[in-house]
Length: 133
Image (cartoon, rainbow, N blue to C red; front, side, top):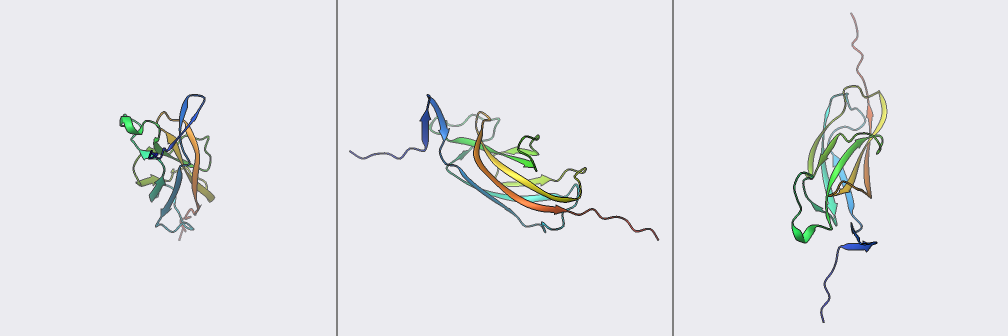
């Protein structure tokens, strides 16, 4: 009898996204980012069926539906972006401090629960000081 592949783990009658993988990249100079700059990001995700958080997933993908949440520096902060898109423009906050930062992209289940799939891009914010003459 043929067996079918399954992308879900059943634990305590809850269904989970199984082993989501995410990577993302940007084409901006990550060593010289300005406050308020738009950072275009391309996300690649595996083992997750991307569904906008405001839409209902199709019945066949209830267990592996998910979306991305993009954070600045800290996963416990408010996300900058919540989306199921794979091409995202992330605006770096105007009040970001100069120095080392990171964007964190985490896969969330459709119900909003976080998964362990997190990827980060490190970048440096440089603030131009106008020179008076």
